[in-house]
Amino acid sequence: MKSQDDLAQAEADLSQAETDLAAAKKLEEAAERKIETAIVEIREAEEHRPDAHHVAVEIATTSGFYPEYHPDRLPITQPVEEELRRADKALEITDTTGWVASVDKRVIDPKLSYAQNRLEGCVVIDWGPAEGGGGA
Amino acid sequence: MHALASQALFAAQTAHINERLAAIRSWLINELAYPVIDLTFMAPGRTSLRLAARCDDWNSQPPSFALLAADGSRLRAGGAPKEISPNPTSVFNASAHPVTGLPFICSAGSREYHTHTSHTNDPWESYRSRAGYDLGGILTRYWHAWLKGTA
Image 1: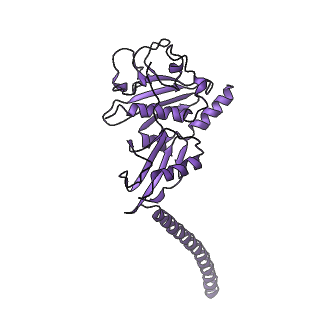
Image 2 (image 1 turned 90 degrees about the vertical axis):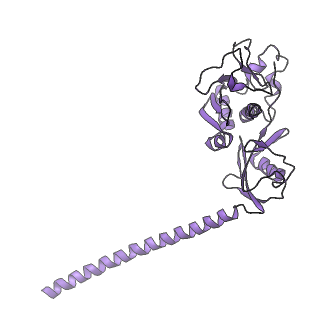
Image 3 (image 1 turned 180 degrees about the horizontal axis):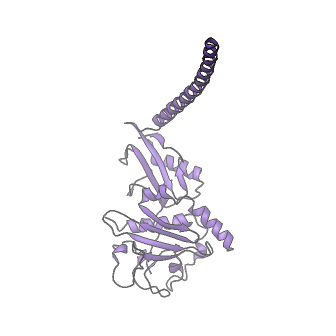
């Protein structure tokens, strides 16, 4: 009788172990997927990271940000206006005549490069119309 | 303009005036719901200026701007309220508007400018379709004007 009880217990233990193993395998698979996602995110972040020769650039306007989700990694020698033109197109801004570009409220010259504008690292360019005239 | 069309245009033109942009510009968004845009402009070493725009009938009519202190109290005519001083662009006018009797924004895009006796020959109609005179553009223009008075 005891050996029958032992056998039944052993079968129950085996069944439980198989269930635990299946659950553990699912957890392992989920962890592997998280690791893969994290690696992709790290690589993407590194692609947009500034260095000595590159800046990470975002354009801020009242029509939205360009790029929308992450900065563009651009050569420090590139004229600022190239990225502004890309922003205009993406944000469907039709006429930027008389607009002002500024970084941390310092007006910059879009015809010059980032380096010439003394910009480095992560750069957010505010892009919008200049003040109009005033006076009654 | 029909009220629903005005509301839809308001929503489209203010969709990106959000906390992300406000953080970069040092704006505080006090209220942004049709027909009101209530923002505070802030800068180091400067007394903040709060603008409350009423955009009813946008864009058949330009927004009507109230100039406020940060606590929401109206700026009063006479003297030189520190919120709009210095004022190198003359966009902010501390004298009494002939209709409201209050300081006002004296630049294209504000209802107070286009209804001022000195500017009735410069109607809003000639601006409303121009680039840079959407709601975001108008706010940006006034912000730039205010920043010009910041050291």
